[in-house]
Amino acid sequence: MGLFIPLALLLGYHYLNNKIVDQVQLKNVLRIPLLGTIGYSTKDTNLLIQDHPKSMVSESFRSLRSALFYIASEKKCKKILVTSSVSGEGKTFVSINLASAIALSGKKTLLLGLDLRRPKISEYLGVHNQTGLSNYLVDKARKEEIIVKTVFEDLYVVPSGPVPPNPAELLLKDKMTDLLNSFDGEFDVVVMDTPPIGLVSETMDLMRFSDVNLYIVRQDYTHKRYLLMINDLYANDQVDNIYAVFNGLKAGVDVYDFGGYNYGYGYNYSYMKKNEYSGSYYDQEEKNRNQIG
Picture: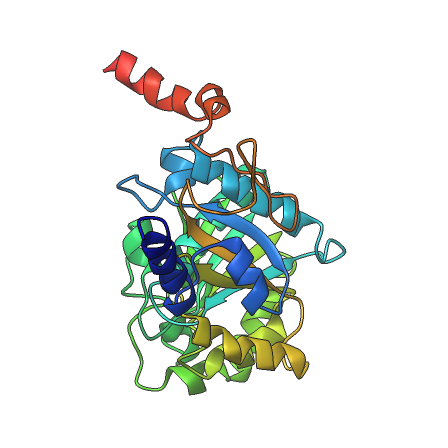
């Protein structure tokens, strides 16, 4: 009884839980390739690449950056679209830190806020949102006025601007197409933060502009049923060049943990803090900070 009751409870929790809890489960449910994983962050900032460049999560973004550089490498200006099923899965968090990681590699990078319904980029980066993409699309601002140089080298941002009454229609205008085409000779990479594809229609329309599409899945948050739609779209060839990113991965769970390495498609290795080898790579930053303080 002492053995079988706990075992039954654990098995029941595993099979009755409707959220994605590990990579094994994700790969069994999801039909699109898994490009990489992003570790769970305990820092009190969304700008991990800039504020904590030696952290484990920052290294996850560098691994994702390396994997992306091999995809659509022939493009003069690579356009990367980031979306998810619903709000809260970390698509804006991934967009900002991925763009920062790419900019740190010396490539001129633009972070484009295409979520006109619930914009968060300006809040996270500390830039104004009074003038942005929505103003440009209704002819209230020029292109030069909406591109903002951040305090970080090679990183620029176009904030979403004030929330319009018709975001889906605005993003379908020819002016949106012309704007994206104009970035080809100006930036090396454009990271497009878009609304959740499971909630609104415009993200599907925006995918025609992108070279690579990233679909964010968050551990212990994303419901299994949310993935049915993206599986159907992929199976029916309605989306292509799309890859999953497993976000918020916590140490100590069943995630193909081989000696401290977290293995995922795209050769993404993340040292887990529970392993003794992580100390010489990621804990040093915290030790140095404590010594200085």
